[in-house]
Length: 267
Image (cartoon, rainbow, N blue to C red; front, side, top):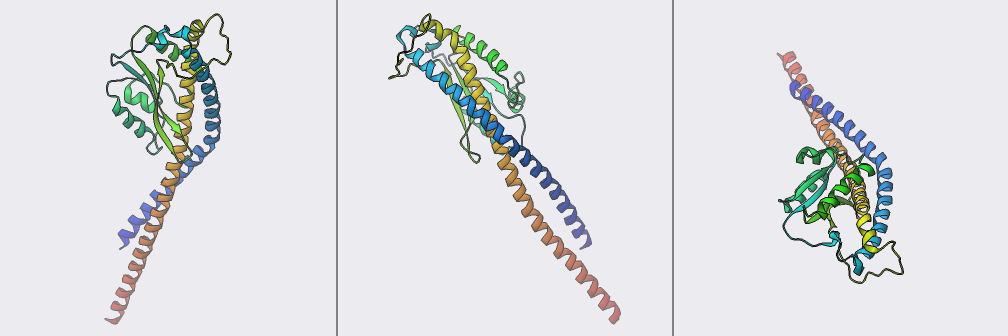
């Protein structure tokens, strides 16, 4: 009985120590959520405004011959994969990697330590990804697309729905699409639409990429907070159960000692 009580006491201490860790990580995640969602919202607005302008350019007759609208089908796909820099975020990273099973032949460009470790790419931090890094990556991707090195470019990221809900998605970026019903609404592009589009496409890809990274990071922080909250609750339940078992073991040990004392006095 004494041995059982000691083991239970050690387990309670171990779980309590883990609970303090998960609670601290949950508080850190909570402190980052507001800043992360604000950055995400700003990037979303910028990307949406730029997308509207690119839709107008791509739908103009003058841009039909742009290399960035060329549709090819040779099976060469590039995917930018955005995962987290750290673990302990529930299924956040696993969902991204599972999503990629649908694209077994794609060339992958990882962002985030977990993705870089898994796919052995140049290291880019998801939390500290800068516009300059995005710009350099976007320029090379656009140059490679224009020269025919691959057929389409997509970004695999985690969309932020709410603090409780995040969804893994792919956003196709290149080639640009001519969308029906899009009108210029009186916009004038100088010197001409084709020149503006070919010049602006790398900035467009940069904006989309930064927005996707910011949204993925906000999703990672939210997923980590939810995971730590769940871990904290589970640890508390486990401590309550272990404490009950420990008290029963102590009570049993005390009862056994009393029985032995009584039996000894009677003899």
